[in-house]
Image (cartoon, rainbow, N blue to C red; front, side, top):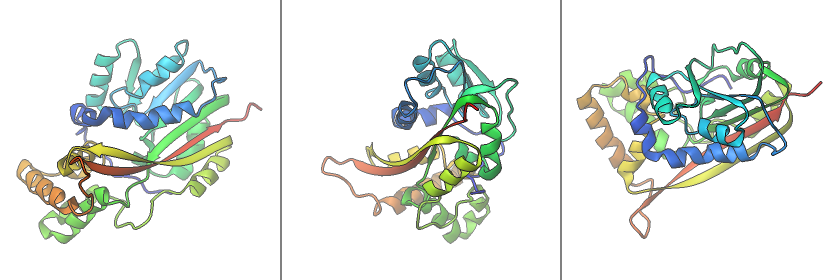
Amino acid sequence: MSQALQRPQQDTWNASVYGQFLEARTRPARDLLFAISPDFHPKAVCDLGCGPGNSTILLQERWPEATVVGMDTSSSMLVEAKKKYPDIEFIQGDIATWAPEEKIDCLFANAALQWVSNHETLFPKLTSYLRPGGIFAMQIPNNFHTPSHQTTVRLLQTHSEWHPFLSGVRYGLLETPFYTAATYYDLGVKAGLTNLLLWETEYFQEMQDHQSIFNWVKGTGLQPVLSQMDSDTKSKFERAYVEAIRSEYPIQRNGNVLLPFRRLFLVGCRPSS
C-alpha cells in the first residue's frame, strides 16, 4: 500500500478550521488509546502527526509520568498545540524522515500515516525506533471511497477548468475502501510486531447541514486541493461540492445530516526479546 494522500507543498493547515469538529476528530484517538493494555507503562511516548495536540493531551493524561512529545509538520498546528498545552513538548518534523535520538516506548499515530507514502518501508522503520516491549498504535481514515471524498474527484474530473487541481488527490475514483485490515496485518507482521489488534469502526457523525460536510472535509483531505485555488475558485468549488452531495446524504427527521466515517485501527507490540 504505497499510495497516500497528497500533502500540501507548504503549510496551509488551519488549526481553527480543523478545530471546528475537534471532539469528533478526537474520538478515534480515545478509542485507539483505550485498546492499549492498562498494564503498559511507557517512559517515552511520541504522538506522530499530533495536529493541535488533541491526541497528545490524551497520552499525557493516560501516562502522566511519561515524557510525551507531539510532532507535526504544520507550524500552524504546533502554535495552537503549544498555546493549549504549554507543559507538553511539541516539535516540528516529518514522519517520513523523522528519526528519534533514543528509542521510544510508544509510537501513536492518529489520522496521520495516510499522509505518508510507502507504508511497506515506513512500518519497519517506525517499529525499529521502539524499545523491546514497545507499542505501535495507529488509526487511519478509510473512507476515501465515500461520497464525501469521491465528490471532489468527480468535480475535478468533469470540469475542465479544475483539471489542474487533480494533482492534489491521489486516491482517484474508488468503489471500495482504500485500505484493508488484511494488508495492514501483513505489514505489521513483516515489521516484526506481535499481539496485533486490528479493527474498523464506522462513526456516524452528526452534521447540521450539507455545508458542514464541506467544512469537515476542508479541514483535512481537501487541503491539498484548496491550497492550489484562489478565493474565487474556492467559492465556486465549494458551492458545486455542497450541491453535489445533497442527494448523497439525506436530511434526518431533526434536520441534521449523518456523515458515515470509517477508520482502520492497528495496535502491535515489538517483542521483548
